[in-house]
Image (cartoon, rainbow, N blue to C red; front, side):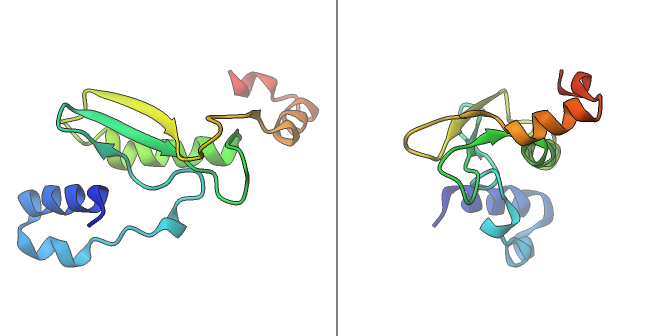
Length: 117
């Protein structure tokens, strides 16, 4: 059993009863920048794994920001047991290589540099 799925099912069962188990489906294809929803430890730490698909390294870009906001809104903020969050990389050799250069150039060309702050 996958620990994230097991915890999510247990939480849903507590809220919605035993039938909730059937409706839970974690799809790895639903996540482009993360390995899935965070795993929450028994001490309340949400472990969030960066795993940008299709690249050797994780990079900061608008897609990552959008997906992070979704992950936080759907899986961290509503979970009252979360006391802290830790970001780690699912990639063995790096955490984040830096910002996507193409995104930075596009922001500068559009005069939107301040939106990166």
